[in-house]
Each structure stands twice: as structure tokens, then as C-alpha cells.
Image (cartoon, rainbow, N blue to C red; front, top):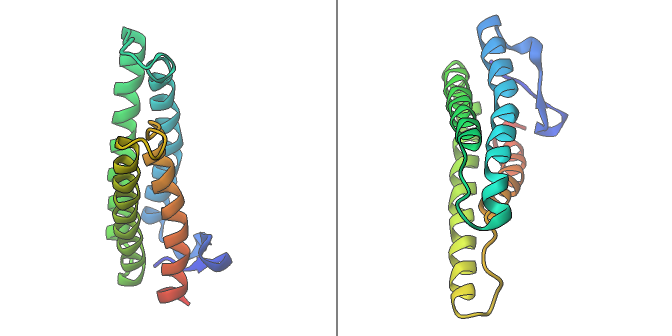
Length: 146
């Protein structure tokens, strides 16, 4: 079972069995590669604010999305092998991050629609979710794991 270290910032690899270790490593290696490929595919589209889709960007997007799905599936398999405490921390973190991201984006969109705020940039949902994920993860680890 997983043991948190560094105040929840990491976990002790020795506490994992071999299968869990392999699943975690594979998922953690695929995720940044998938994000990079998806970002490379989206760059021409976001740069022009149009739909300049070429076969090259389509292939990058499809491969990136496939790698992201595989990474998510591997992490899901990893999570199934962990104890209730890890799953509680992870589920609460993902739920709160998603909910607060939706609230912030809804308020921001309403304010932008009446010209009281700038339009929501295309990267804002991902950045808001990532920031909320970090904040809520450390709150959950301190709440349940220590």
C-alpha cells in the first residue's frame, strides 16, 4: 500500500509491490508525453484562433489522446490496488478540483459575457484544474493521511 512522504508531495516507492510500481511508472511516463503531443497539435489552432488542421496536427492529437487514455487507464489500475485512504484522498481531490474549476469558469464566463472580464483563454480550464488539484491534494493529505 502507498505511503505518503514529504508532506504528501510524493510517496515511498518501497511501500509499493512490483505490479503497482510498474503501473505507476508507466502512467507517470505516458502522461507528460501525451500532454506534450496534444499541446503541439493544439498550438497551430490556438495561434491563429481558427481551425488550421493538417494531417500532421491530427496525427499528433490522435496519438496524444490515445496516450492520455492509456495513462489514465494505467493509473486507474494502480488506484484499484491501493487502500481506501489513498482512494479517498484521490477521489476527494479530483471531485473538489473539478467542481471549483467549473464554478470559477462559470463565473468568469458570465462576467466575460457582460464585458466585465476578459474572455476565458483556451488554456485556462487546464491551468485552473491543475492549480486546484495541487491545493486540494495537500489539503486532503493533511486531512486524512497524517
